[in-house]
Length: 164
Image (cartoon, rainbow, N blue to C red; front, side, top):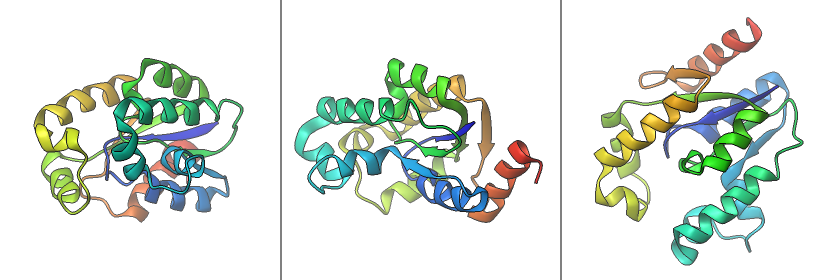
């Protein structure tokens, strides 16, 4: 079974995914890193800026579909991966979707400290509500990590799936 981490940008999917994969000794596949590996060494943010959202989402879909035969792994998605209905269908067929929920105000402060994509600069509250709805609708499990450190979060996931 794959454990698939979903949620907003800066929720901690990649960081938590790395720690989780090390603890359960399973490989980590990070959708953003897969996009970068297949695109001339640019960061996912640089690819998004250079190519635009349409091309970025196409690359993202290719990365998701490249994981179709992966078993017993941790998969960290990008913040917008679930916007695409085909990605949602594929990911649901791959394993358990875990929504790493973070309260809007906490998330907003995290995002302000990083490079902010154009779509978040416009109307963060609206984007948050739209994506939160999608994440909740497709998640098999919702974990509120607003006030959790990484270790506690990983331990909660372990206890849910492995009884540890």
